[in-house]
Image (cartoon, rainbow, N blue to C red; front, side, top):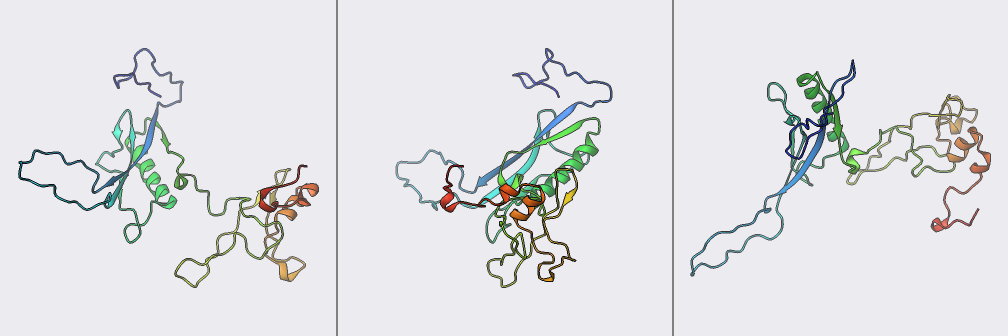
Length: 230
C-alpha cells in the first residue's frame, strides 16, 4: 500500500514492497455526509435602515451523500463515468433510511467499478462501525433473546406497525459441534413427538448436545441481571 507524506504525494523514503504475484493495495474509505438546507451562515453588508429578516427555525430538510474515496484516485469513478455515489433523502415520507441492504448494494456497485477500472490493484473498502454496517445475515447464529426452553418459532415472528399480518423470520443456520459436524437448532421434521416437529430446541438442549450439561442447568438470565456469586 502506498504511503503518502505530509504533502499528499507518495513518500519516496518509504516505497512499497511488492512480492511476486502480489498487487499494490488501494484503500477506499466510505464517506457519508448529511447536509441540511439551513446549514449555512449568511453574512452581508446592510444599510442603516434595514432590519433583520426572520428565517424559519430548524436545520431544515436533509440530504445524505455517500461515496467512496481513496488517496490515490480520489472519488471512485469508472472508465465511462460510472459511480457508486448515492444521493439520499433520509426520513419518514421521504426515501426512508440507508439500511444495511442499501449499504450492501452500494458496496457491490463499488466493487464492480473498482475491479473493472483498476484491475491491477487489490482493493480494500473501509467502513466505520455504524449499526447498518455491522448487521449480521438474517439466518446468522445469535444467542441474543434466545429462549432457554423449546419454542415453536425462533427468531420470534413479529407484526409490523400498521399491519395485522405476522412476519416470520428465517431459521438460524446450523451451528457446529466440537467435532466439526453440523448442529441443527431445530427438532427434525420426523421427531418422535409430532407436536414438536420443526420447533426450536432452546438453549438448554443445544448446550446438552454439546456436552455442557452443567451449563444447561443454569439460569438463562438472573432477575435484574443480579446473579449470586458462583
